[in-house]
Length: 310
Ligand code: SF4
Ligand code: MG
Image (cartoon, rainbow, N blue to C red; front, side):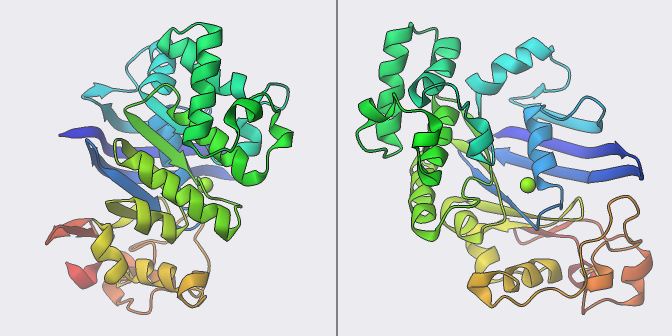
């Protein structure tokens, strides 16, 4: 059963230079208990896709298509109902813990807030639950550290605190955007392990450009390029055998896999290349790729947008 179904999603941002189409016709679903990783370079539209699901886009953004959560269209429910759903059923772990945490409030009270709001628990009990959550995300001396302000936490501890906030209301579905961004390697490993523990019992969408996160935590991986999905496959097979030329190039460009950058740069989303959006950078480009837009096709449990596999 699908918990989330995204169909024909288009998201346009008005800018002074014209409309930026950040998401161009995305179809994607996440099954109950599945952990889906959405990967791609920065600017490919993956965060915008995440924000669309949370219904946290700016007011002037034009969104077309449908996002169903448990069969309910997220864009046809009242704003207030959406706010309740987000936080209670849909836990949000946003990128940049520095800005997700309020510098003027103790960490414990910030984690207690969603508990009081969504679980209707009184203050003192909520604080106790917040301390337990800090222990769960492996903050040492949680009772003491709950009384600290964010600036007294290291980067890794802030990220843990943001994760604790995201899971505080015991949501069914969690969206995490770049949960390991800016963390050093040892801290990152610990966050990966934490996400892995959480993912055992949850349905998750993890947006990341970090392959280690995708590989260690996700069941399935979707690769995004220039606003479109180009490959979707089980995590086990995509890391062993990436098929789409962009996926391969992206993997090879990462520090862990050789740091070989893909030639050229990501295209403008105001006036993207005709045909296959990746064609100006693809070493397998044929004449057809320059004029015809490849569709996403499914074969042997994997989906691909490339004429090589059509
Ligand atoms: Fe490369 Fe053509 Fe495939 Fe696009 S469709 S990725 S240009 S081979
Ligand atoms: Mg992003």
